[in-house]
Length: 488
Ligand SMILES: [Cu+2]
Image 1 (cartoon, rainbow, N blue to C red):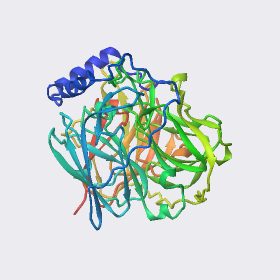
Image 2: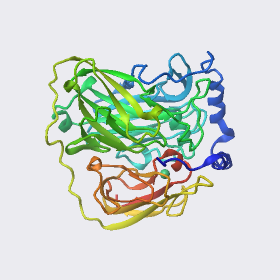
Image 3: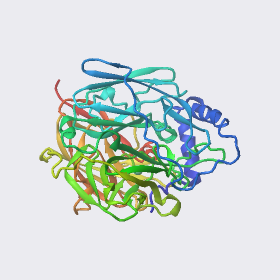
Image 4: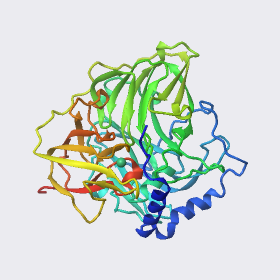
């Protein structure tokens, strides 16, 4: 596939040069922190990526509140260099929240506030964005709203929205790409009563599947080179390389999150069997979709239900990537089906009532482009400038946006903060069935034009951003800022 093939060495040098010129990385601190830690990596000869499906999958740890009050749970997440055992027996320096790679899962309940105190021990600035969260601009973790090294701050999340698979990640401008790559991301699962009442697989049968890729050096270190799509050819699931997962012969709900910087995944079962997709980025679909594959660009989420009771104990079924063009990245995760167990969970024929598609009061167009020579990214011909407001919308407005990928080879996608949207069309044709729900991130393939109906939250005003969620692209300027105006 063609994505991610921008850049080249000239582009990389350009990017690194610009990063230093921009002066946001005081003295290249990231390199020193990470490089210093990297010299302590492994040490036991050449670190090898194990054969596929030879290590067990880990379920990300769940964050525990440090304090709970009548209406809020308080968490503390410390971002700092850490060491993770990603490859068996190899110590890999990472950047981590509370030492976990990926970060701890936060489970929240609608109507109950979450307050996260983030402490920055990274040695360089950070911000933390709750992707898909309906939050005030002050709590959105915008790219210039930096938490300086040695400092901390609290982010307040109202959780006033419907149940959904959200995630949190670093968003510091120009640094987010490397920070996310080195591990600063985690799942945030929002539950609500409607969803709980459906009887879907829950508890230990409701499992985050955080997908990404990585390139490892001979010493087991994570090698970060901007735009290095081709070099990042080890697939990680919840921080483990192509693991296996022992499942009971029953239904599981998997929260599949594409947390890769650049890689697109198309998840499917090696048997070619159908499974159910029950949710898009921002919550449950109207009805389960019976499908054999779900494509996900970086930042997108899909909740799927796989019923392993149709397989004989002992059978192995691989979750594979239908977009992969190499055998080594084809397999994502192997399910090893164990014994049968009682399964009271169900997937009802109706899951949720989606808000009516309201008429739009404005049309806008966003043309995404990347200059292959310089690696710079643009929207409507302009790179991100934190001092510029590109347009203003009214609080609670509904608008139709057309997103166009002007590149003929390079993949992009599009994410808007705060708002959710519905996909209206792809090149004038129908959207994919897998995106027929509430979304906040949408893939825009080379030359493609995608129409979306965007609904802005009625409560919040202020400045938010929109960008390509190929993080290596947003870091290079493919991002813009808008203002929500309104009284009160
Ligand atoms: Cu892009």
